[in-house]
Image 1 (tube, rainbow, N blue to C red):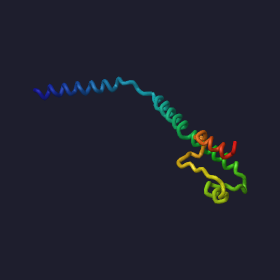
Image 2 (image 1 turned 60 degrees about the horizontal axis):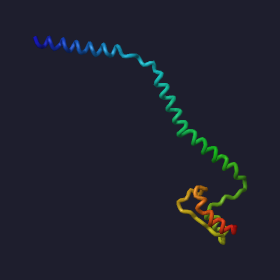
Image 3 (image 1 turned 120 degrees about the horizontal axis):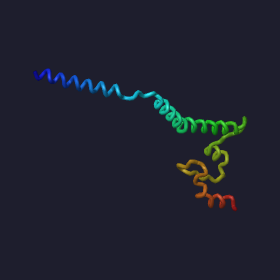
Image 4 (image 1 turned 90 degrees about the vertical axis):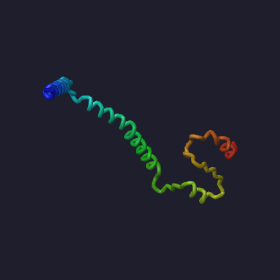
Length: 112
């Protein structure tokens, strides 16, 4: 007799589970498209746009060098102009980020 009682409880439990699954609202799928669109926008601003900017800058730099121009790195410049004074900054970005730190030395060199 107990086995019949248990089967009724199991049947009721299963029917409740089906009833709960049937009442869940259906997802129209718009949220997936919105999420994919948002991911593409983030991808564009984080990866694609900076790469396009670097390509544009590189192209402008290459176009600025005319045919027949000579491009030298610091070693070749030192070899050609051996009597010149060199200030080599180790680990520097070779930009104007720390220009103010060397302004006094530059004005002294230029005798200003």
